[in-house]
Image (cartoon, rainbow, N blue to C red; front, side, top):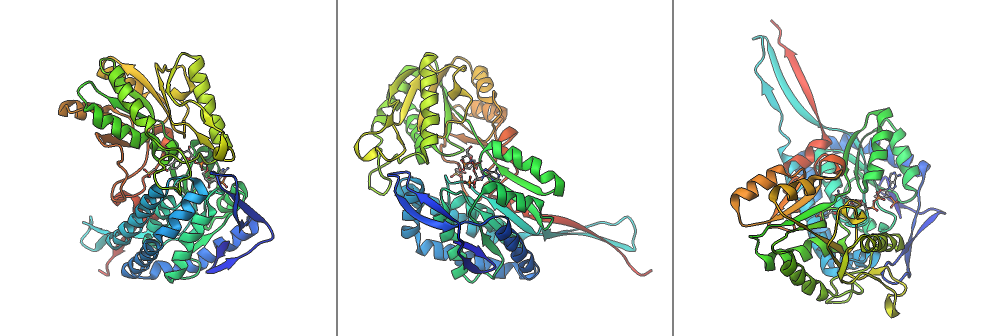
Length: 475
Ligand SMILES: NC(=O)C1=CN([C@@H]2O[C@H](COP(=O)(O)OP(=O)(O)OC[C@H]3O[C@@H](n4cnc5c(N)ncnc54)[C@H](OP(=O)(O)O)[C@@H]3O)[C@@H](O)[C@H]2O)C=CC1
Ligand SMILES: O=C(O)[C@H](O)CS(=O)(=O)O
């Protein structure tokens, strides 16, 4: 359903939602286009003055009510997420918890939007700076974290006093409906958040063409991110872009191999490898590459592939058949260029998996940098191991590429931790830590992994404008 100006709207045109687990039709949602987008922008514009004039405490109360409603509905929403995009229900619950953390974090941050006074150059002047909401925000979100990527945007926007037009991924509209239902049930005033489904290019064009929309916040592929940068120029919109990644995971010779292998399972196979911060390249010091590969292979063999709704399943399907084709192509290419498949390597098409998008969790060894997997984002359950000799070589290899989102280093050497984490060209460095993402820390990348940060103290900055007040007193 579309949600515009506080009302659920139907449409003649509908979007089918299909299960990645078994290909079944899960439901349909109303689709909107340019006309509905303009109505949503008008609703957000109309709601902006009253919403931005509410006190920070009032907005804090609304955001916490939304968080409480989502918390109370965790089980049913987790089922919606798993059904729509496949991740195991335990991961869906963890994502809902992260989504709630963003709401609660920014509810608080909205109460700390401080200004400043500046010593004037003349005794008859008073200088100050206030912070004001940027205005109407367009938010475009991906399918792989269908609830957390929404609250990571609407929470800071609403806390700052902005109003929002949201376009979620077409693969996961039902999850987005659950978030907006929670906003509606929390009494968020009409027009503050609006929900559209439909052709991304048509909706985005209407958002970009409107001078009312002052900011676009996007999470998705680098390819689309670049397109948005070009489209935003005509109306000079502020952009926050959380884009693709190609994380290196570097295991030095002094690392705790058991812990590093366990942590690599988490970093590589969470969400079947469909996260922008997933490990894409595993660099292991040449002196330990064989024992580490065997240790890691043993752990991969214990992963359980299946329907994410079933308990014990740790790897669900990929989002669609294109995703399966992409990882199959990367594995085939790696094999042709000399990689050895230690575990997995094939799509799963037998029996109950026939109608789903399943691929075996896969370990490639003897990987080299001419392989597609060494530079194309994988977004699937494939881990290639590369060996290295020196720390400098590991850093150079890790930094070689257009992405700069997440990176991981495993070593117990404190000086090496300082040297390597400072030398890595990434927005995030996990140090003996495969899961750095928390609401209170700035999440984002450098190079072609994006612009801006989400979460943390920094995450609300992009929804605010500075205004400088220069006051000449009566002399
Ligand atoms: N840095 C980060 O935090 C994250 C990055 N990503 C990256 O996103 C990619 C996977 O997600 P995926 O959803 O496939 O990415 P896409 O870029 O294809 O889609 C992301 C969103 O953008 C919309 N979209 C698609 N085409 C356009 C367009 N031309 N103009 C405007 N919006 C458009 C999609 O709508 P529709 O679904 O209708 O096509 C969806 O809502 C990976 O590269 C991953 O690394 C994903 C999550 C987090
Ligand atoms: O989309 C993603 O990959 C998420 O940003 C990953 S995380 O925020 O859950 O780490």
